Length: 500
Image (cartoon, rainbow, N blue to C red; front, side):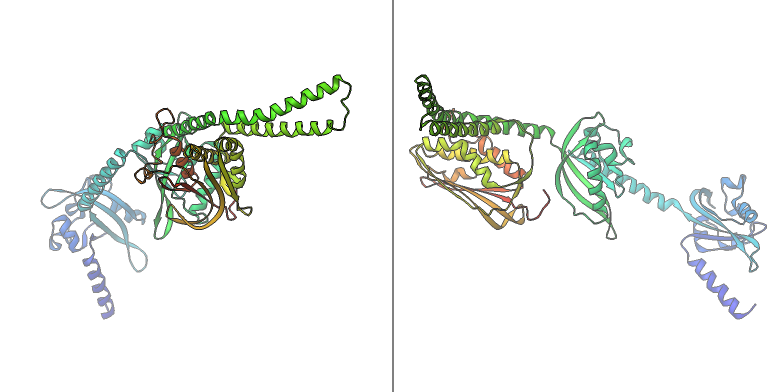
């Protein structure tokens, strides 16, 4: 053998000796021809004790009494990968090992023996046990959480869900794990759109929306409203799924909707008298003209020079009355929330049509300054109208001896809302009333807080106003000084080219 072959053999043996796993080689008679240090540690036998011994005397396992993997490998010429057995070491203890047995070939490619690479699983099993313990502990933490926690991979498949999530959805954990979230838990009318958004997010075409609300479908077919907080799961910078926590807000939303409706009815009650008075005036005028026309008819003088003028006046008064009644009915109607591009000037005009006569009856001077170049905002016309009516009615009550009410619209750029800088449309409503003491300003939007006399209100109006503006991702501010009046400013984000 050449010096080069000797060096190669020595280098190979050094590599095998330094390996963490045990390595042994056997000839075709199953006698051990190589035994490294790791094999000594695992089996308890020294190299001197193992060399030239039958393999089964050193690698004692249950397989030795059945089909010997080494003999099978030498017959087939194919490797057997990663099988687990228990070896009995020199001291008689069982050692779990993971083994790969491969054929040992000559330079001509003939099978001349076998090589076994085996790893002690004792340490690894301990590590897996600890990992299982940590996983179980983490699962316990997830299960005691009062919110839904769900992980979805980039295929939309559920990989983790906690106990609360199973309770809300009505499924057992094994009914959800491995299933597509969108096919199982999203109502059919939303399914394709949400799938499109999700896969767009996974592909990097869509931006992550951290907080939002949507509807999910339970096993029983019920729909629940969930407020989600979301984060992306990444691996080496690649998005591989989402992890979300969700709170079931169905009952809260129902309560909020009932509160908004009840506050609207309270506003209608306050408006009823002034609207009735406003409608009564044109009706009284119409009645006068009807009597005049009847008189002319009886006298045979119906076709006179003043008849056309009288009929036109009746038409105008009827149109005005119809407009007032229609607007009142629109405001009173129980409609589903509808977000659409709207001109806030039109909302102001609609609110003033209902409140205007109350303002006049209370001897209040109305000053209106509306910017005709306002950009559109995405909002619910009915809900914003309710906000304006509520604030304006409060203003009239704050000026029992009369005063001035100013309402204006304008563009306000660079307004901070929820830690973001936005371009907005601003509605400003100011009165010259009694004002609000400084100690009450922070409580103004708190439910059931009121400074009104008993029987005049329960303190829900401004709380509802605040809730509506929050749902529009807007902001409302109030400034006031006793005896100097109060100013409310409402900010709603402009659309700026967004899709309606």
